[in-house]
Amino acid sequence: MADSVFPNPNLSTTFVNDHNQEAQAVWDAFHTEKSIRPPVGLGTSAQFFIFNHELNPNELVTFENYMTQAKVMLGFSLIAAVWRAH
Image (tube, rainbow, N blue to C red; front, side, top):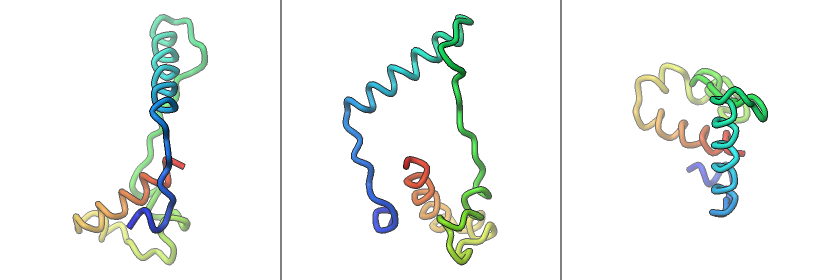
């Protein structure tokens, strides 16, 4: 389902390893009070994605559906995860 809406990212092992190494360096520097740059964590709620018109055109998934139907929650969460990765 998600592949039909968004292309599957083709992330190489090198890309992922480089990212993880950079992230570790940023957090290590932060914890030793010698920040390279501020570490950033992204926190979002389900409502942000449900009311996002790119992800949920015509509001086909309602917050109630999302919270009460496991298959709707799973399907929409997968689509949102792919969207976030891009």
